[in-house]
Length: 224
Image 1 (tube, rainbow, N blue to C red):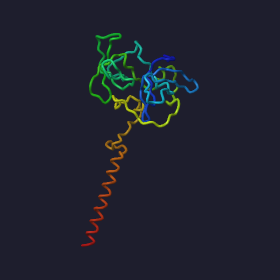
Image 2: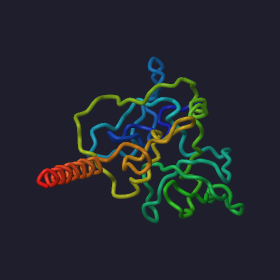
Image 3: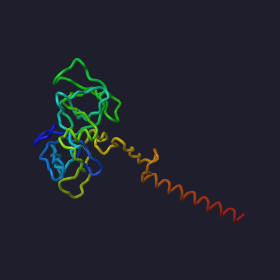
Image 4: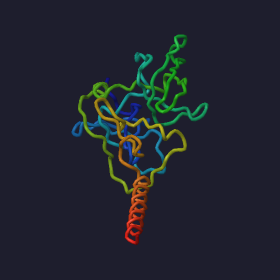
């Protein structure tokens, strides 16, 4: 399958300074010299200055999925999130297929999904979800096996991070641990990872109190 100009896709782009996000985009062109696609945000945020990116082949997935794609329980997918009855997010989130109702076919088919970080089961139209294959498989499906890093088309001045009011906590970015990688340590210090700034300050404060206690205790012993 070769992606063509104006093809709608899910693209993993540096949407914020902290992490990549999977968004609804369209193919602008293929750059053979750089082995990458140029993609454009299909629903650009007017507050942001960058709406186009260079994206590696493995970070682009055709959207919506093909009719021939088969979904089954246990499949990893990227799915849009229902914001309102008729409104959907323009960002994808990782989920796992729990069940595929057998009584539904064609355009009316739905998938029962469990999103990462959420224990509830959500019924989502099949047209709003795509299979989330391994990186090598995604690169092959895009029509090229080349692998390069995602980069912005142009650099922009630093701008404040802006979080949409819904479902920002559930990232579907490709910056999450992939096959063979170790999970990123929790930065609260609870799981052996780096300590937070607050925890470091509290440790320093406790150290100062302990030193003061030891000094006072030593002075008391000398007076005796």
